[in-house]
Amino acid sequence: NAGVTQTPKFQVLKTGQSMTLQCAQDMNHNSMYWYRQDPGMGLRLIYYSASEGTTDKGEVPNGYNVSRLNKREFSLRLESAAPSQTSVYFCASNPKRGAVSYEQYFGPGTRLTVT
Amino acid sequence: ILNVEQSPQSLHVQEGDSTNFTCSFPSSNFYALHWYRWETAKSPEALFVMTLNGDEKKKGRISATLNTKEGYSYLYIKGSQPEDSATYLCASSNTGFQKLVFGTGTRLLVSP
Image (cartoon, rainbow over all chains, first blue to last red; front, top):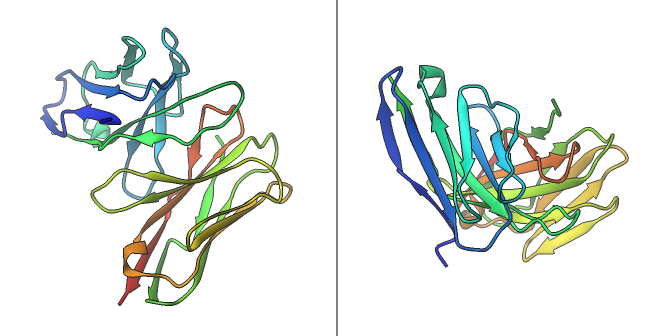
């Protein structure tokens, strides 16, 4: 099992450019998440998908869109990148069975710099 | 927005010392409390998920307790080792079991 994989590992964008961060998991998990990590702040939830076909906003969704392509894949799109989106982005997943809080499994992260 | 606070921000101990950290969270509508260990250049890895008041969990030399009525959790490390050096994150779920709010972490450095 590869677990949660993310591509790319690093990316530099110019202001206004667009890009999609890819995330995939091979653990047959129902729920997937996108977080951003900034210095001095905790991981902040951008969007999540409780199950295939559904997505919901987290704490900081502005400037992002997501797609839950299938059960394995959950992508994060920046339509017009801004310097404020410079961050490390983590994808995570967990099983979600019933009303139980399961631990989340994290990918290796994507370090994005917007100049 | 739920506010999860961790203290101390950082801690430097000697090998063999025992140590503990605190995580504070709003007690209203509490659902679950997670602890994660995050080593530099790696991804966060789950240590514990706790839901019940009075819960105590243990994994090797690391243990955690939960008080949902007063809104705090303690993480204990007994006999710290250099390999315990990492940032320890806690996260609370109040609005629903899917959405976690993370604290900023406690960075632990254990010197040989």
